Length: 180
Image (cartoon, rainbow, N blue to C red; front, side):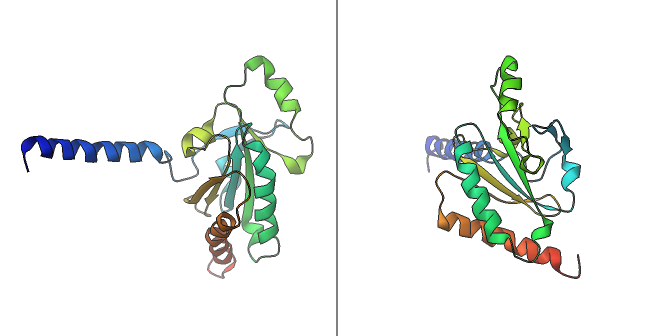
């Protein structure tokens, strides 16, 4: 191999690894956060210690897909052993909302306590975990806070749901075993 070809090859490999690093989420654990919901209740990562955390989040354009995905996952695990160890964490990516519209936007969210959503004005979750714009982003964290699965989607997809459940159900089963 000539020197020029070796340099080109090494540059190509270096570029590949740099791009791969950029494309990956910045962290693979549930990183510290402090974010309020639409009812002004503050949540941190400490609220989810020991739980299997299922994050469902999106920006405004992706929001229309969240309900279908959340319902499909919830219905699929409703009567499964270990369901009580799963905590759904809804996140609204509100980066870019002008400060003078924050109150108006906040008022658009449900008032019911059971329908709380983290209002992520600074984009903590989307930036940390590389949310896909215009889609429902789904993250599964095990009870230790380790990210075990990440996906995104728009229209409902049976195969994608199957993959999500294949990652979620073993965590639920492990949570119900006597060793835990």
